[in-house]
Amino acid sequence: MSGDKTSLCALGLDLGGAGLKGGIVNSEGKLLEGKHLPSPVHDQPEQIADVLAKLLRDLAEEAQAQGWEVVGAGVSSTLDVDPQSGCFLPPHFAHLEGWQGYPIAQYLQDAIDLPVLVENDGPMCAWGEYLVGAGRDYNSLVMVTLGSGVGGGVILEGKRLPDTLGRAAYFGHLCIDQHGLACPCGRRGCWEMYVSATALERRAAEAVAAALHPTRLDKRPTAQQIVAMAQQGDALACRLLVEHAGFLAVGLTDLANLFAPPLIVIGGGLSQAGELLLAPAREQMNALRLPICPKIAVVASQLPFEAGLLGAALLALERFGGVYVRNAKQS
Image (tube, rainbow, N blue to C red; front, side, top):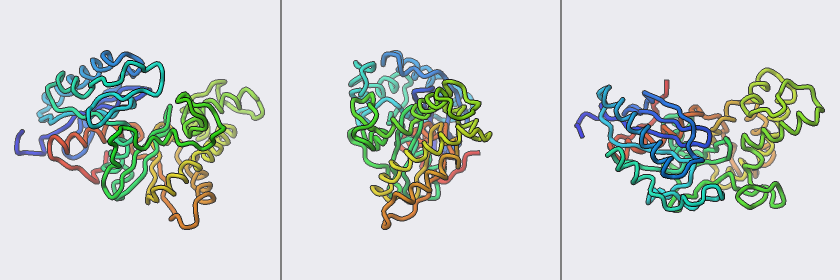
């Protein structure tokens, strides 16, 4: 490795349920190149590993062609990973059986001849937001990601919450109603059954079918359309977001009581709703929280689509290149 740390970079991947993102991140914490592919998470682990390895090789070639020295790669994974061994953990869902123990980190390391770390996506989103996003002026934060499911991460006094079992900050499976909706995990009342983008889409489809309110929403609207229509003033879409905020506030209040962080960052696709979702959530949190619990800032992610990728790449840059990046703003 050269002595000039300004020439160093790391590769980052974000393996999500909706897509696969990859990029090159330099020693200033800037995302230089980005690629987006369909998500391979419904394939077998060997096929997923091949897709990830090819993307990493392509990114490494691009970085080297531009004169960067690649120190390694970080992968943010929606699929549960043991961060100590870099192997997939036993899945919660039947369609992922057979993945347990697959050495994804070692496979990728051998494939690209560079050190590779693989971590769970919630903690990596929190780390990215802490370093270069909405949390860069805070020492502690809780991150909640609202996508097809619900994830999260915790930063306390500049340190990531230890995750020796690969299951930390499993916020989506906090129980908010033990007799509530059935979750694919086998339990009832899991928070993500109420506050994920999937949950919003389900309630929206039910509301449109009931035809109680005039609306421009499709019969089976996507979360993206619901947010867009709410921003344009559609009454039903706005009502759905306020209702969603109520469920969001219940879980956020529990997290506030547990961690008392100065900041909660809402990430994932639903963070694009901004104040249409967060303002009513804050109002209801204030009504629910304990009097002794301090008032907490609740804000939207500044990196709604890149936090996991950046967090993983910046962790790789620190671990493999000795470069710690904090407070850099993304342009």
